[in-house]
Length: 503
Ligand SMILES: Nc1ncnc2c1ncn2[C@@H]1O[C@H](COP(=O)(O)OP(=O)(O)OP(=O)(O)O)[C@@H](O)[C@H]1O
Ligand SMILES: [Mg+2]
Image (cartoon, rainbow, N blue to C red):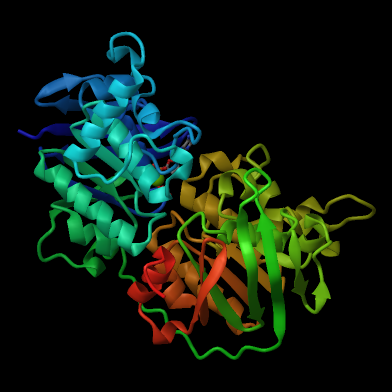
């Protein structure tokens, strides 16, 4: 008997988006079960149903052979089901143990006995071999450590099944390896793990079984034996996928971006977030920035696009000092894909159409008479780019919220890549994208580079940086600590610089 059996699960989002169409999923106790599929395949929807966050349109769920109704996460956790989302929900100014017990305080004799609570949380941390101090503030933790706190939080609630929705999307290779060790330890102690990832090598590394979804349907559940990444990709996409990216030698031209002696101090702590950063990008090359999240790369990008004013140093684009220019003035010369598509990249209240033509509307060709937009032209442009960029949507007048995460990202990328700017700044451009979309965007990045655009690529995905960059900087503690030709180093070496374990 399966531990968990989901049968004929349907989910139709009103009015008529069929996200799941008769999906079965069975989980055995103590297994690591991966769920894979392209963007919008229905992975998160299926798991949110199991976690009681979303109500299925029909279908049934059995736990240990008993039919259950899981109407809320509270209900789910009573059944031993816990989920860690890709967006963490921790309170930075709270200690680790406070975050862990949040919402469960009553279970400790009606009020919080701090020391006792901290000790209890530390016990759980140690039992599962997580190396975290329960008395630390969450704001002092790395992204990887925060993710562990989320897992510990579920363990504290006595989860027997842990659903991890794209947990490695923000981790370095070393951090991912560490997470895998911990997942295996959890399995050893009898926990059941559901693992969602777009990275097939990871899936092949740790799963016992793999369930493949495509367009809301279950294609197969396979044992992780004698199955290759290529076969999995074919099941996911319905056709074989060419993996290799062929990169020609770059032919860099003149400098399009130059960041000179840039320093930024935190207004809050007076700590230096960026210290004397010097980098340059030339037309016709992809320049990568590698670093563990929170080491200044975000602020560097914000300085370049004009959101943060540096305390010293300057930014030169196309030989003009732009340090004093506003964001809006810079947007005319920079294409920019922000890491936070939800709050910065997209206007969630606007329509998909409006989102696609934002910034383009500053251009003359979209104007009709004085100050009025040529909507007909805008619409045909939007249709062209959504087709070109394979954005899956129903109606351009809908809001981007109805799109899957990957398709939201494609809207932003489509808009920015079609602007035609000479400088393209990409912050995590493929985060959360499936293999086909990632490959597509990788190819576009190289096409842009071959068309003599200058590209600055900030990414937490080291493989992506190694594949695409012509030159690679490593940033740590706000300083550039290394500058490589990616052909001459391996990912592991770069990783040691990112972690501060080298040089
Ligand atoms: N709240 C919602 N309202 C309407 N449609 C939705 C909603 N959430 C998801 N969908 C749609 O349901 C389908 C499945 O989405 P889901 O988020 O489960 O995909 P996914 O496999 O997790 O994709 P990704 O890899 O991009 O995270 C998609 O077509 C998506 O557009
Ligand atoms: Mg998802």
